[in-house]
Image: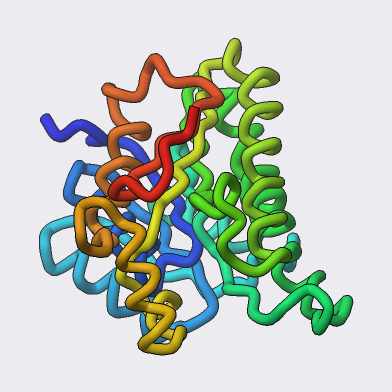
Length: 248
């Protein structure tokens, strides 16, 4: 029996990168998957790939900053696939520029997507998890919370998600819902390659294993926390980073 057979997962930002790899990995482990994001084409493609491999998945177009849209998306997933028991808060956007050049709208947009997005998705599924007596909430942070090697707004948003993870974990662990985070290092995604060649080379030089991580490697950590191996993890942060930082 597959590790997640009978479970239903909701993955935000599922159309590309880590989210896409996570949706595919959770489906391979037996979960039915609601693939949430903004770009319909990418969501349809990943859902079709999952179904072609024998899994169950549906695409859900929703802006995670819109609480009503997220709630409607969760309802659609639960009507089609069943009660959501696994939530992966992955939706995110990069933040660019120096703080002195940043306007409030740019600051707010990054926090809205990362932090408010996690709030809306978690609030939509958590009551059902508590009622069922089982759930897994996994939020994607970043090595930037320790290194500060990115924009201030991005590092701030990801640090906020660690506080969210730890505090929520304390509140709900007794209900059978385990809340944890994954904080990746440099991952070979479209976001990484938005940088210049010099910036990419400098980033690669910080990774002790000598290469960027692949989205599937991050998905493996997420799947671990979602599956039986993660049953003892509460409020923890796994950091698959290739040796860029040793959190402690």
